[in-house]
Length: 76
Image 1 (tube, rainbow, N blue to C red):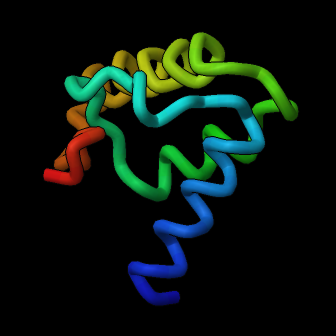
Image 2: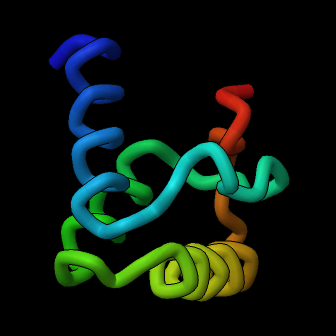
């Protein structure tokens, strides 16, 4: 799958869940695959708080397990 297609999927899932990327905290970092998995697990309209809660849970779990590199919300 191309990067462009993955990005389109992420945008579609953010929209479905109700996360407004214009107000998304730039300091949150998450692997693209993890973000997509988290978003797909959330119900329609779950909102940004549900997504961020799951990201934080993943980060805590990853930190305990020695997680690797992550993409930030700014794409770096």
